[in-house]
Length: 390
Image (tube, rainbow, N blue to C red; front, top):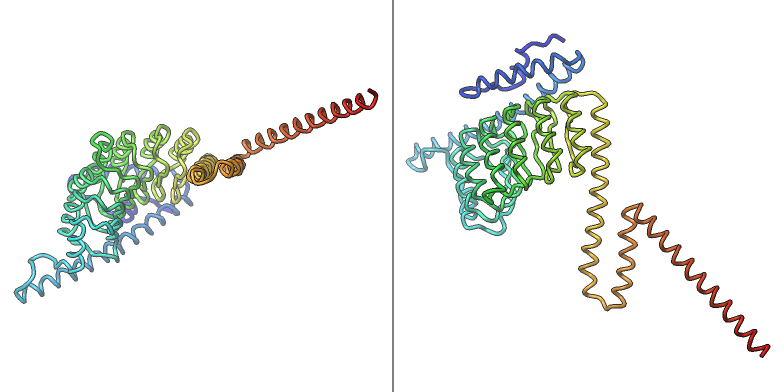
């Protein structure tokens, strides 16, 4: 396989304007990473990037087709002397925005992903303006909507004002490093200004390089609400993975990290494995579509398996204890004691070591009772014999 920079340009959409120099620098890093791989891995990686490019092209074509249809509707309405000069907003979308402004309690989940709704640039701007004051919406899906770096500042302002939003999907939103940096600044200040309570954030396929990844890592060090972040299908190398690994080692909040289909090699994967070994709170690290040796995969798998097992045991214990506390107040004292004993056994069984200790204690208590009964029987026999002889 002959690899050159032209094939990278074919696989990765180019940046323009202010991002041009950063993009070219990242392409050189990409070339260095891929050139260090053996031919088989080179071929697999280029094929993976080409597949991803085709998917993103299909999404862009679908968005472009819908925008063309909206423009045709607007032109027709304008020719008939009615409607706005821009794309026509559907009646359903107008009604939805009105409900959002009124904080309709039924609108806790909004899905504007490609195929569900088709938002124009004006629609997206109005949506961010409305959500800045909304107190009901908890999940927002903008996958495939062209937010772009131009509206990233408005989105960041929306996140600062909104305190109810918990999950945000910005997959394939065309943010680039510039847009991601704006959002990262808001996430990093969330703990200080009391806004942006996001727990899940997806930045899938946004052409995020190590530059944007660095700002995300800085923000995560200061954030105490995010539990899941997805950075799949970007151009993050081992340098960015190392910075995220440093966050994972220290974070008490982050649990899931998505880095599949990036440019992470052995060095970055080993750092992430080390982070999962040090921090038991890291439960999921997705690295599919990257190319690294089996050692890193085995270390990471062992660490995550241990962490997930411990977390499952803790969750089961807490769930059972909560259920017992809720039930105990409704029972009579004697019934409560029986239920408490039954729940104690169930709690012990969730942890093999605690269960073994419980069984040992139970056996010791039973032996003590048997010894006491034997001693009482011996004393009773002596009394009876003394009474007969007297």
